Image (cartoon, rainbow, N blue to C red; front, top):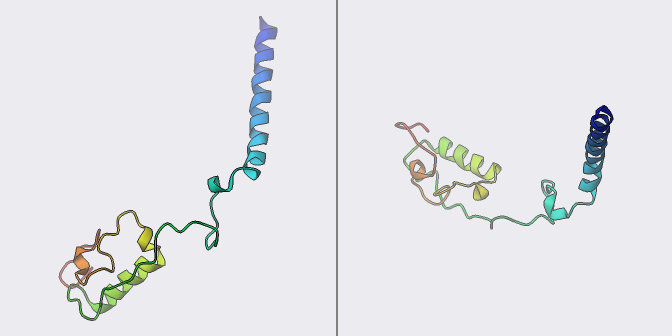
Amino acid sequence: MRSRVRWLHTLLAHLLIGWLLAMPLLALFAAPEYLPAPVGDALAPARAQAQTITTDCAAQTDVPQIECEALLALYLATDGPNWFSNSGWGQNNAVCSWDQVSSAPLAV
């Protein structure tokens, strides 16, 4: 009985070690669509089309112009068109109506 248990432990240890050694090798030969694309990779599929910003920060009256510009800069710098929830961002002058934006009087 003891030899069977030892044999089973040895078998499981070899399987685990084999699996741990094989995983990095499998990653080398994995299909490219399962591997993360490097930032800026020209072959990576575009998830969204370029978005035209129509917000005029000088004309809107919800928040100071500098805060509106900061929000738009944040939106563009962090791939805003591909956010899960980006309703209204850069599409109208009602900054406080943009998804997830709230403001106190004259402050975001």
